[in-house]
Length: 116
Image (cartoon, rainbow, N blue to C red; front, side, top):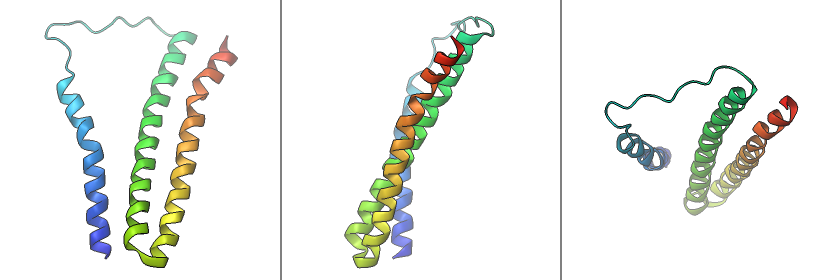
């Protein structure tokens, strides 16, 4: 049962990460194009940096939460009474992760309000 769970977890991770690899391969800058100019350091640039980091963290946490939901569903279906208990715990942690990710999206706006 453990090897089946490990295999299912691995397949879930690969299936969720494969589209990201394809997007990276498809979206390439044109040959000979110049990178955008850097505007320097300042409050606006700090906001952009924090916003980019938060966007990446948001995407990563949502990906992990979706994986937890998939694993919880798998345990509900195949685990019996003990699997249902473990699946419920994973579902609770997935909901906590989604809530944390949504709250993290507000952080750049709070930072912008403090800076301005």
